[in-house]
Length: 226
Image 1 (tube, helix red, strand yellow):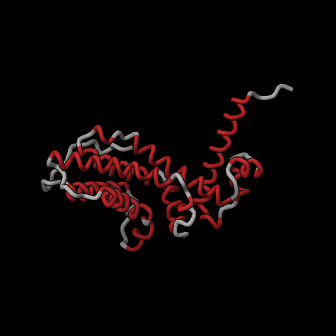
Image 2 (cartoon, rainbow, N blue to C red; image 1 turned 60 degrees about the horizontal axis):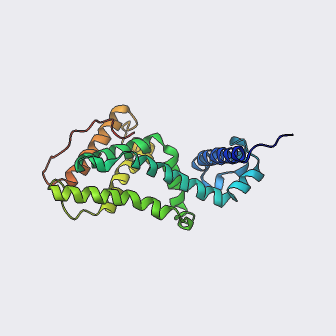
């Protein structure tokens, strides 16, 4: 019987690992770390448990790999925005719109972050990839702010990390708490119009917060981002 070529074996192994990570993302997002079951992940990924443990490791290693892949996905998408090719205020607006759209389209990412925060990041702290991976976007924002300050359109001295956290928070809190907020304030915050009003509010808030001229705002396609 003819054996598969080494290249085919590597390709199959890579495809299997991707299926495992995709299944793990759904499982951990839906059930949390404690409620997730490796059996279900293996079944969904069409891989036996022995292969899962061979490629990735135990449940904790699989969870960490899932978190790392989730962060890698959003960082890759951010790089593809090519923000530094835009004028500073337009670049920040695009980042805000992208962040909102990404969170809205990827509720599993928000669920994973909520789960890991419940565990006080005790798994994430073991990652060797996360610090370097996430420092890149902060560096990009820093260069955009510095360029804007030199041009006189952005207030000098803005901390890029604080700005990025503010952008993420303004988007994340609304979307991750949308069901309870809808009940508490007796308003359908999930409606299309409510979502549109929210992102326009966030964009305006961020740009007014960093611009030197009050009300200064670039013209950018509202669909920019994803």
